[in-house]
Image (cartoon, rainbow, N blue to C red):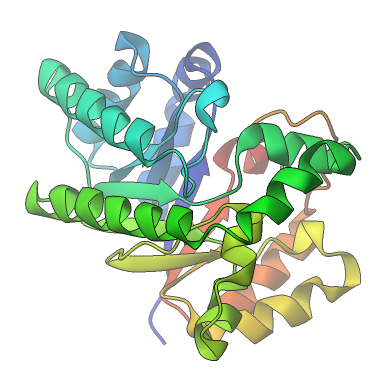
Length: 269
């Protein structure tokens, strides 16, 4: 198998992002590895555009990882497709204003941020009735599927390859023809050009490598981690050490030439 292509996720606020890339060694290392960046667009600020332009000039491929304000869900889900569409429109205007170049667009499908935060901090009873109610609302999922199909078709027509970031259990639902977990968690399948599964063994304790090996053959792109960083959820999330990351990279490279590492800032800590 050829040398895998590495892509690093970066999900920093603008000030921290600028500080990270003020170190020339960071860009030099990316160039040496022929690696790309999936840049979380937490905002559409001039400062973030400056970093994208810096990477463009250095020849580092940058994928625009679209994100929403936390109050709109942060990640894309079955219910916030209207906000996702508006965000894409704003992204296009920002891209034109600052003359930015993109290797593609990233669509991250995860539960609503507030619900995720409630689940992670043990407030299950605050969100469980809403999650159960979704099981009986098939139209919600269908509307989300149709809206995202239109949105991704637009992205592709605009010349952007689209990559999606999914929880791996989507494979199991696909195989049995179910949408139970999608409805329960508020998720939705999207017709991306390249599908990545978030196989973060740091969250799975001793089961992690087995889960990675189980789902990796189904993925176009394998996401490994977490090495730290990411949005604050109110709970300290475990992170891989170097030996664990090296193990996961070796495992992932058996199945895919495209490996996504979450996150760049975690790797540099």
